[in-house]
Length: 162
Image (cartoon, rainbow, N blue to C red; front, top):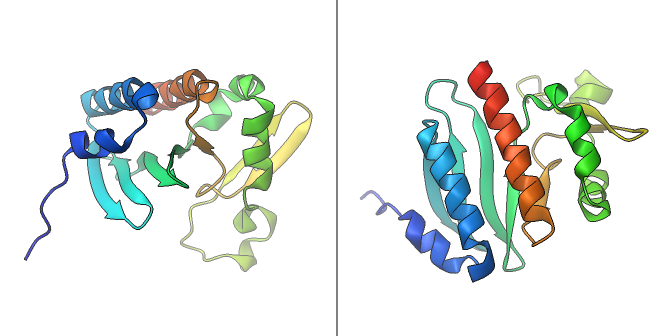
């Protein structure tokens, strides 16, 4: 028997009230661009993924860690808006620093050949070669929400342009 579909409102009810507008805005923008959402119940809470049906590529996930809302962004076009990373707060840069390195960028033989290559980019003078699956995963806070919204918008615009 198929699992019943989870409504976005169920996920939203678990989001802290001060971040519901942020999550709703992102959901609306991605839906208008044709992204399909998939909502699952995980041990840590709801997980919402957004996949474009034509490209079959994910753009982001909402997830909960330690009861806090987090966003994981798949920044396939980050090379086209590198100056944006200068806006990262020190806390956001710490998240990038803690992310695992991309084995395919360092030594391709060390990683599964089917794994999608990560990101090679700079924040200031610091070069990072990070795995795409945890590089841009941030907690949503009052400080990060506007930066994350701009980040997602940058990625959406680049993907639309192709």
